[in-house]
Length: 571
Image 1 (cartoon, one colour):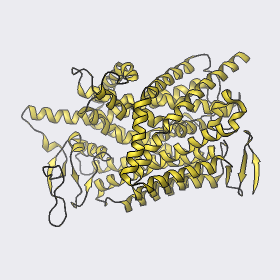
Image 2 (image 1 turned 180 degrees about the vertical axis):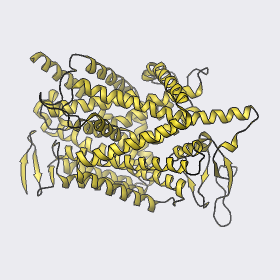
Image 3 (image 1 turned 90 degrees about the vertical axis):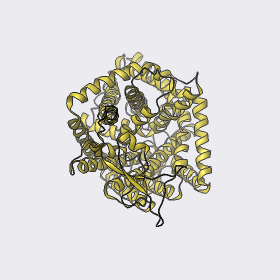
Image 4 (image 1 turned 45 degrees about the horizontal axis):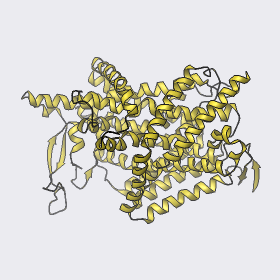
């Protein structure tokens, strides 16, 4: 075993050719992750969820205002940096040029950023806001328009402004100032060489823990969602065994991608994923008609811009009901994005060397926002229009239920519990449902043995209602399922690379062995928690990381502006 000192002054431990790690951050982060997993497993499931969930909710109540102001400030800062005097500064040396073309670059940052979330929430979230609109909004507002504006608000400019600023700061200090590509470098302008001590160790460890726990819990929950989709599609049994097998399969593919490297594995998978996602979106647009779709795009942009100012600063000060809604939605989203910012920001920084600040901000902020609006319009508007037209047909006395797909719906008793026959099978009745009605129903599998979760299968229900063809609907649903799996793979292999960059002391090209270690660790943690029932508890715990990360992001912004000003003055 030998040691080599990094630029930060901290020794790197070398175990052979393929296993290098930071002597403090790697073991400390590993120990904390193991400790959190053990705590999640040792506590009774209800107690763990209650404990971590209560902590998350308390932070939301006490510091939700801070999340709101931070996200607004980051959006303003992103606009200033893109349009201001620092826009021409290159993220690298003067002769550095981008490593990846724009299409590959965009595909990778979008796949790592929020692609998987859009697949599920593009249908489910508009339904949630239609059924339970934000409290305090004028009753004269069209419910569907408000639902879409609220959904777009959570997925458009604000989260991407956060990712843009965090990624920009990491790329600037890592590639232009030639500091380690690590979170400790963000604090160098303020702390100087003290970032090489325990302050830097703490920041890097927090980034690793937040990234791994966030990806592992998402992988576990995602396996449940994929399992539900396979049950919906093919009648595959809904159970832990299938879900662990899915985690194993996704981890294996992610591991192969990690072995192939950034330029081949992650890049090619991201391009394939974006291509399939765009194909799926075009299939939906073709079904609803281009004219109807473009009207929806125009309406949604207008609604989003109309409600953007008030939604951005709404903190629920005048209504307990409004405060509770904000904690469940906007504050939760902002906390989730902040807790994911180490992962997404680092990954975006790693693939953005050589771009100017202006190009970087415009690419990271505006392009994903535009795609998010186009995607949400295709899936969200289609879902809400289907329900509106069905309800209008009932009012007109036509009742077009024969146009809708039919499902096995559980028969419920007076307490809302699904009834079973003497053989233990669920009692069912066949009903034709819109996707909005599907979300609120108790859907039963074909064999009558299990209840299918409606949240992860809402998109499949929408596609089934859109394409009544016996072969076109399964094709669209099959493409959607493939996208889900690929988005999880790209998230897993991207996170492995990000964690290893930090754990190796800021090396932008970490060795293969440690990359494989983290890829396998993500799958192992996810499978363990899934079997033991600790996923929800650990997800709540990972979101609490948003509070210390908020402080780090604020300090990083101050340090970035100070360094940019110093560079401008020196020239």
